[in-house]
Amino acid sequence: MVELGRAEFEELVADALDGLPPDLARLIDNVAVFVEDDPPPGQRLLGLYEGVPLTARTNSSYLFAVPDRITIYRLPVLSICADADEVRRQVQVTVAHEIAHHFGLDDERLHELGYG
Figure 1 (tube, rainbow, N blue to C red):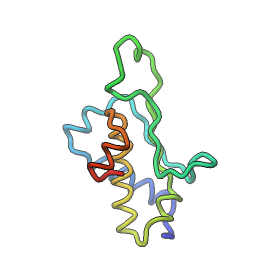
Figure 2 (figure 1 turned 180 degrees about the vertical axis):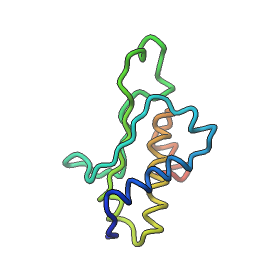
Figure 3 (figure 1 turned 135 degrees about the vertical axis):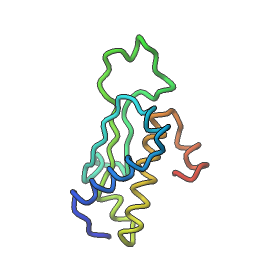
Figure 4 (figure 1 turned 90 degrees about the vertical axis):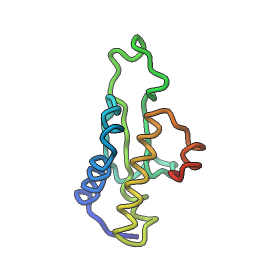
């Protein structure tokens, strides 16, 4: 397992968000991104999207909705990586994967695209 402090890991998540193509970043609507050490008990996750995907929103049903939430889990990511470069790549993939859920892509399609 790679040792990487929370602040450094949060920087990697911020870098992954900053690295999104501008046209895509502009379309992300009402999403808050968090870093937690571990997923909920009993779950094996690197990240989690909670919210209403853009493809399922209507103006009336989403009017006063709380922000969607993306959480990236630090310790599970670190546990599957061999070095800092691999952590950086995995964070980028995980952030992209969760953002894709925001756009309505399911896990099957993400696996096909290499973001599984």
